[in-house]
Image (tube, one colour):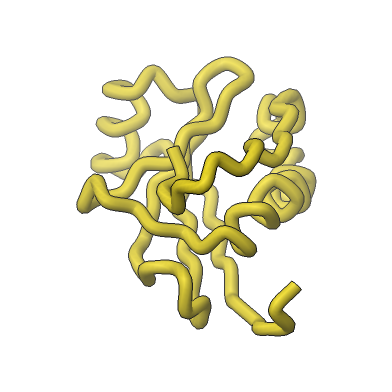
Length: 111
């Protein structure tokens, strides 16, 4: 809406990587990966862990104080869906996640 451009980066973690395997076990996750938002003045630029549990998706910040701007937050379901479609051959259960925009509550933290 503002006409600004932001960069969204998505990755799917390698489950054989020692740290990722540990996080996957600790979170009882089916899949996990990383998300980063760059060049958005309303978002803090930090790597965010995402993980899938059954049919839900959770985002977890390293600092515990994740800030993703409102406009970018509204786009995340669409772009996660596109990313999950692109990796469906190696992570087919990601296709089962139905992502919907979260109703606006006035706060800027994404939970």
